[in-house]
Every structure is written in C-alpha cells, then in structure tokens.
Image (cartoon, rainbow, N blue to C red; front, side, top):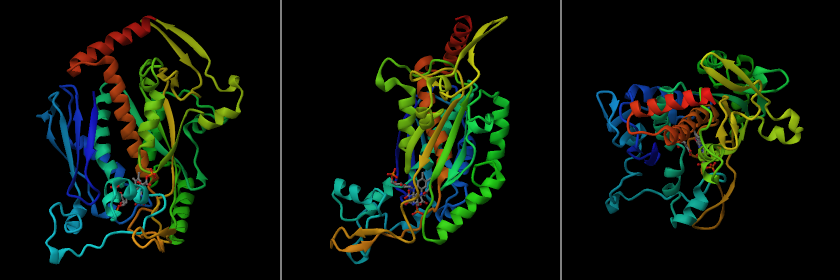
Amino acid sequence: MFTYLTAGESHGKMLTAIIKKVPSGLSLTAEMINKELARRQRGYGRGGRMKIEKDRVQITSGVRHGLTLGSPISLIIKNKDWENWQDVMAVEPLADEEHQIEPMTNPRPGHADLPGAIKYNTRDLRNILERASARETAIRTAVGAVCRQFLRQFGIEIFSHVVQIGDIKAPTWGELTDKKGEIVVTDNKAIKNFFAQVEKSALRCGNPAIEEKMIHLIDTWRDAGDSVGGVFEIVVTGLPVGLGSYVQWDERLDGKLAQALISIQGIKGVEFGLGFSGAGMPGSKVHDQIYYQASSNGGKFYRTTNRAGGLEGGMTNGEPLIIRAAMKPIPTLMNPLHSVDILTKREIFASKERADVCAVPAASVVGEGVVAIVLAQVFAAKFGGDSMAEIRHNYKQYQAYVRSF
Ligand SMILES: Cc1cc2nc3c(=O)[nH]c(=O)nc-3n(C[C@H](O)[C@H](O)[C@H](O)COP(=O)(O)O)c2cc1C
Ligand SMILES: C=C(O[C@@H]1CC(C(=O)O)=C[C@@H](OP(=O)(O)O)[C@H]1O)C(=O)O
C-alpha cells in the first residue's frame, strides 16, 4: 500500500504523482497537502526559483467529497516557471528556424550532469538535470502529506529541525533533552512545544542566537560564490511497537528509512539515535535499559533513555523515532569549479545556473515527507485493510494485545 511513482521535469509543465492503494474513507483535501508544500518552500538561503513558484496541488483522482475512494490518487503541481521555459522544454520538435536552443555542455561537479549524460547518451546536459533536479521533491512532499494524514489518524506525528548549517551546530534532540547528550524519552507535549518554535523560525532551527550565526555563514559563503550544506533531525512520536521486521534484510525499517532519506537529492548520510557517536562508546552507555509499568488496563514496557532512536532489530520499539540526515553543499556554484566541455573536451568552468545557496531547511520538510511514506507503507502492511474502518479495527485489537503482553 502507499506505493507511488512521480514524473515531471524541473521546468516542464507540471509534476505528477500516482499513489497506489490508499485505503478508502481517509479524509483528504488539497489544503492539507498545500500546507506541507508551503513549508517546503520556506527557509533562508533559497534562490530565485522559490520567488516564482507558489506550489499548489490539484487532486485529479481517487478522492470524492473530501474522502479517499480506495482507487489510485493522482496529484499534480504546475510549474509556474514553465511559462518562461516553453521553447527550451517543448515536447514537440521545434521548427528548424526556431531551433536556437544551445545545448548545455559544461557539467557541474556534484550534480548528475556528467554521469547522467554518459549513461543516457545525450550531448545536452539539460536532458539530465531537468529530472535530476530537486524540483521533484515538491511532488514527493505532496505524496508524503497524504501519508502523513493517514498516520495522523493513529496518533503518529512527524517533526523536523535543522541541527547544523555549514560548521555551525545547534543542539540535537538528545542534547536538548539531557545535558549529558542522552536521548531521554520526553512526553509528546514537550516535543510538540519545541517544534512549534521551529516552525516560526527562518532556518527551522528554533534557536534564534544560533540561527543568526547560521544566517551569517550562509551570507558569507554566498558572497564568496560558494554554497552550504548541513544536518537535519527528524522525530516521530506515537508509533506502536513492531513496525518493520528483522526476518528479511529488506523488511528492516531502519534500512527502508535510510534508503528513503538518502534518495533525497544531496543527502549523503543518515544516522539513528546516537548514530556514529555510539560506535566509540561502551555498550553499557549505548543500550536503553528496559522497565515495566503495570496499569489497570494492562501494562507497558518502557525505557528511560532512547539512544537507539526508537528502533531495535529493524523494528519500532515504541519510543520516538530519532533520525539525522546530512546534506552536502549545493553543487551549483557562482564561483564555479573546474570541469570539461563534453563536446570539445577542453577545460572549462562548470555551468552557473540560478541556484539555491542552502536548502537544508527545505530538505528537512522533504525528509519528513519521505519518512511519512515509509511509515505509512509499513503501518498499512501490518494493519492493512481496504478501508480506514478496517485498519482502525485491526490497530485497536493489536493495541489491546500489546497491553496484555
Ligand atoms: C530542496 C533542494 C533544493 C536543491 N537546490 C539545488 C540547487 O538550487 N542547485 C543545485 O545545484 N542543487 C540543488 N540541490 C541538490 C541537487 O539536486 C543534488 O545535489 C543533485 O541532484 C545530485 O544528487 P546527489 O547530490 O544526491 O548526488 C537541491 C536539493 C534539495 C533537496
Ligand atoms: C525548483 C526547486 O529546486 C531547484 C532544485 C535544483 C536542483 O538542481 O536540484 C535547482 C534549482 O532550480 P532552478 O534552476 O530552476 O532555480 C532549484 O530551485 C524546488 O525545490 O522546488
């Protein structure tokens, strides 16, 4: 369930997605999706394109009177910039006398340009960059919004914040919750309050003093014709124990989440909980000790720390999910790097397209979206049914079973 395909070039007419097997009876409106699209467009450091686009989705199938039908859901987002690119992006061949479009032949180090051109046998790099572009993340965010709306029905919420821009760091969730750097299990209200601040801030960091330094760094590197990367962190609350599985390599939820996040353009690393820092620590300081609390309607296993980031054995363990993803600096530089012309083989500078200087805040919203998609897929695989009523029934039974375990 919730499998999907996207299509569309960055400066083409529109982006499209089709989502397969969304259960019937889920309340869904374009406004719910547009909210997420607007969040993705914000963030200090973006280039001229975000002033042109005002992303709005159209739901073109699978929904009637605000409720899903169980049939495929199709979504489109029109590219406003297409108006300015109609000749360059024309689908039909241009008449000969009009055919003045120069091919792009100077590949950018770090972008898909050169390996893509060799792989797809084209001498015009535009044929590659149009689809490789992170413009595609707009429609993935829309798919993520549908999945998020599904998860919300079961009390699952997804948040993100930026924890590093260039070499300037902000506290991660673990550092925020405990001075010793442990990721202490925190109640969902505290998590919600913190992320409400993040939503109001320019870089999705939530700490005004640190953001000021981050903004200064973006300005400085931009003025030098350079670009900036960083790290964002995702926190998911309300997950039941037992999503994903250890029984096959491709059923492990940590693997699925890492794949989804790495697939975002520019993401180069993913870690869960303590992540890389745990490798240098003794086991007694890494693993979360287990406790049990009995109550009138059953009981609950719990941990007082969450260094594992909510995953053990490729399964959710009932604690919040904590994931960080590292984004490399944007490849297009106004002070371009050395490259080679693919036609003449002469030395040349890489192309200097209009570009973002920093897109880490936007990537964090895309990250929430792809995490929502994976979680909806594994949730529906476990509690599946054709309608929301059926899935709700299955989930309720499972919750009662877990309480009685
Ligand atoms: C939201 C977002 C915006 C991006 N904006 C740009 C950009 O303006 N210019 C650019 O060269 N790369 C940009 N990128 C990164 C490139 O798309 C990416 O580096 C490229 O497709 C190569 O893929 P890879 O870095 O995953 O290897 C952006 C990425 C994201 C997630
Ligand atoms: C369009 C988006 O991001 C684009 C991603 C991108 C790239 O090479 O990845 C290059 C830029 O495109 P343009 O050359 O049109 O300015 C970004 O603006 C978007 O996020 O919606």
